[in-house]
Structure formats: C-alpha cells, structure tokens
Length: 478
Image (cartoon, rainbow, N blue to C red):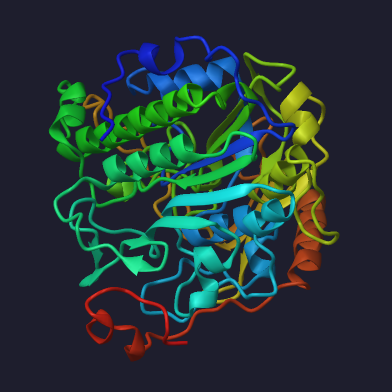
C-alpha cells in the first residue's frame, strides 16, 4: 500500500523521468476531476492552501483562468462524458439522487467508448454520479474497461455508506472489506496498481473523479494538522482534504514515471463546480459558489500538463467550457467527435495558446425551477434570468477571522447582466443601464431555450432501497 508524505512536492515531481521512457504514438491521458474544489482552495490562487504537487503541475503546464463548469456535480459530469450541455441531455436539474431513476440516456456515446475505438485502455476510479438504476447506465457498460468507485454523489469516506446503503464497487461487485479505511487512500492504490500493470505499448486513459473534497468533511489527522493555525474546524478539515488529494495526485504521477509513461502523458485537471460554501469550500473573490449560477459556482480551477504542450508556464485567459473536454481529449487521442455536439476542441488553445474557438456558452437552462432559469455568456457579457441560486455574496474563507461574510443583497430570482471583462466578480448589474444589450442577450437565451430537453426529475422509487439489494445501492430497478 503506497503512502507518501509529499513535502513541497519534491518527491512527486522533482525527479527526472525514467530513462528509456516507453512511449506510444498516442499520448496517455489522465483526466482528473476534483469534487467541489473552490476557486480559492488551491495554492496557485491562495498561498495558505498547501497543494505543492498540483501547484507544480499547474505552473509547469498551463493554468486556465476562464474554464467553466456547471453549477453542481451531475451536470458537469454529463458535459465531461458526452460533450453536450446538460439541458440537451435532461440532466440539468440539480443532481441524481440515490433513489431516482435518472441517468444519461443510452443514445449518448460516452468519452471512453470513443477512446476504446481509438485503441485506448480505459479505466475509471472514483465517483460516477451519472445514473445506476440499470446496469446499462453504469461505467463498465459505457466504455470503461474497469471501474472502482461509487455510483452516487457522495458517501462517508470511511464507511462508504450514503443514505443507509453501501456504495462501493469493483467493476460490478460490491466491496464490503473497506469499512474504516479512508477512501482516497485505497482509490489511489488502485490507480497505482492499474498503472503498474498497464502494457506500455497501449495508450492509457485514466478518468480519476476524486471524492475529495465533497462533504462529509473527513480526513486523516495528519492532513488536518497541516493547518493548525486555521481556527475554524470545518475549514481546517476541508483544507486537509485538499492536501490529501494533492498527495494522491503525487502518488499517481510517481507511478506514471516509474512505469515509463510520464513523458508521453497529458494531464487535464478540473473541478466539477465551485466550492460549496456551506461545506467550508471557498471561491473568494468570486461571487457565490456551488449550486449557483454566479461565477463562484461555475468558473472552475483547471490546468493542463504534459511535455507535448508547446507553450507552458503561463495563465491562459481563453474561454473553455466543460463540454469542450470531450472533443479536446478525442483530438489529443487522434480522433474526432461526432458532428452536432456542443463541445469544441480546445487542443490548439491548450497546446500553444491559440485563441479559443468558443465565443459563447450556456451556464444552464432549467425548466423545473419555480421560475424560468437560464444563464448564458456571449463575449464579455453574462446574462442570468430567474433563479441564480444561493448562497449569494462575496464570502472570504472562515479561517480569516478578522473578516466577516459579505452577502449579496439581491433577491434569489431576477435578471442580471454583467460585463465580466470589466467586472469579473459580478458587483455591477447592468440590466437597467444597458437595455439594448439586455434585449440582445435575452433573445439569444430564448434561442438556446428552444432546444431544451425536459429535465429528468422523477420522484423517489421505492424499488431503489438498499434493503432490497443486500444493503447496497444497486442497479436493476429501472
């Protein structure tokens, strides 16, 4: 069992790649998704956060300053795996709850399915959250050669239980032997095992959607102790969870180096949404957080790293959206996405800093809310109509005890227009002062709304209860 304490990341990244690196023509691709990682919860934005491995990867690669995700988990993961906006799939409303017969329909081809056709070995370790009521909606039926993780959106890090049911799988089998073990540890061990057993002449795709730092707030004490000066207990734990993930990424990178794969590996790292303020995540100075359409909920931390990058060591300000990772990864693998998807390949932007082919995107369009809800960005302008979400405001991290929460005064529902180039923190609503621009943006939003697929939001299904499935959340009831 691999356990490494990474002091300033030196052990993870300081050593040279192994001589005689075993390269395939196609790059190995490691797609890392952090869960609920806030804008202000990484070292390259906040020096109080100890993420030496991620910091070094980010600074050696390219940091994305305008990489957008969806406001909560399931919609972003839909975008990553399909290349479609969630409102074109039916997964735009909140998240899939354990008892709901919700899923990404089978007519959508997932990213690993396309990569397998290009000759890749495809492995997933971590959080799914894209439906499991039928086996056909689970990872090994959607393109992954192996799956080690959990189906739902969150679970206890030690018992691996959520809502009275065990949720831990090794491919299709329920895992009952990990009670009391911290999930991040054994998930990382599995990734290392996959890398060590991988045939170097086959291109490898690793999808690593980490459990960290989603609540419940739980972490081994040695990580929490790294933040002894932080007075707020929940914030101290959250920061420890960030550092635990950082160490895990370091262990994965070392395994790739030891296997001779690192020199031909493209790493893409992103969060799935902004930090969850109610669970001690932080997005300061951005407005709001997870569950909101404000920038704090949707502008995500992200970077790319790899020796194939032609321009490195800088911050890229080009516009990228979660749907773009699908065609971008396919392009890096030598393939092309199907026509008609919402994503566009950002490969040239990532490799050499060329201008993004994207000039606009949809934050979300949801027809289940009590009022119409939608948000778009076109150029520098952002429009929100309807339910913007809560909490609102510009909220410093709770460890800064000399500062207090700064809540927004706007109602939860309304119309907002911002120029994000001039006002990236969304302090100045231009809806009243720029009526012509407002009408233009509203017309654009209504045009997008015409292609909306009604959101799946079924009631709880009693057939889902773990009591009927040996105590575990299991497929087979839809």
